[in-house]
Image 1 (cartoon, rainbow, N blue to C red):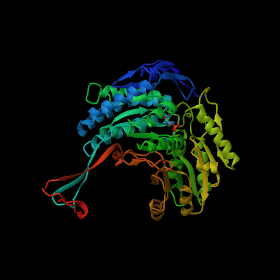
Image 2 (cartoon, rainbow, N blue to C red):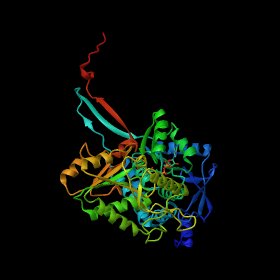
Image 3 (cartoon, helix red, strand yellow):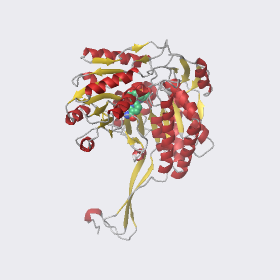
Length: 517
Ligand code: NAD
């Protein structure tokens, strides 16, 4: 049985100004929360299954007002010099710094990830804000040499418009934060539709936004529309007033977004599901690999897009490694994510527990041999707990190609690096991948064009826990989008190529002659 502190939960909600089971608006625009006239959405504590709050969602008219407000805010914001936009992002980062503990507790309560990971999630928002402040002075275009005399040829980057951010439950602030911190710096305004499973944390974030931006030139640049994917989400993706949709979630959702946004020739940054593998070669540092695999597979209860789902072991070390892994799994403490001793909290919902159960049934039916775990746990009445699970699987099992969003790890044995790479690349998704080896040639092969086909390829580092400085995203069914650092900002702006003639002739490109008279 998990010891759950009820008072602590009520205290966390009170930082939002709501009582347990109370009502709160999930609609905000033009710098204020407004009454939402759509259906009421209930949000639950995954540790106890108890109702946390009832959230008002927008109807079509509320939604339209939010979009129009976001458009008006964009028209003002796009003319604010980028370094001044960066200054607002700096203040946002600072307020997230100040509120880190409060927000982390709310994430832990509503999402179920352990406090340390929830703190890491808020830290990620702070980090991307810091990055974006620097970026605000580096939105560089290039100048090219024109082939025509007395001509200048260059590119410049302009703000794009309202960016629609659709986010998943598992990173309720960090991943949308990768988007909004960069988009704001780029001069865009934001319309955020968070996951219906984690609305409270987005409401808390919206309050932070309002505290910083109200009364400044940035007032109203953040709008929030909490609502179901099938209604509010569909409204966003179908809306021609939103030139860019940043969508994080399952591959199925992403396919729908790609279809709808593609049809209206809008832009989409798709950040979808992963099926990430760690390869451990015979010469690897097994201590290092073990720690990385346990964190990758069990951390966040297996609910990261980058969670380790497949373990590909070279034959020489496979039996030892599996034994050590089974032993390590036995010492994972499962329980209340708000308790500092817990390493694994609950899954997000009853539906996720069903997904775990169905997945395990399928794995057994297809010949998987459960080495550890496999059961749903009754740790707390109403709580959504399962065991972290290791299965000896065969590459031919179709279920291994699926992302089951739970802590299930398939272990495979291979003879060589070539076979391991082939297996790594044999799934529809292409997000994150890792190789553990001490061999420079193996590591370089892995990172070469015939190595990993994923958006993230690591050596002696696990699949999860990316830093914001690099561009984050994956290939194939993962969607191809990139967010956060490096030059991911370019997707949030429109590129313009300009030619200026400062001479008195009109030479045509490619030497074309077209003289009249
Ligand atoms: P989900 O697909 O169920 O929902 C994600 C979001 O999409 C939610 O806000 C939902 O309301 C919305 N949505 C659903 N249908 C929609 C529609 N028709 N139109 C518009 N919006 C719609 O995903 P989830 O269960 O919240 O999150 C887990 C998934 O997200 C996993 O597959 C995970 O790998 C993926 N994920 C990917 C990344 C990444 O960066 N690649 C990061 C986090 C999570």
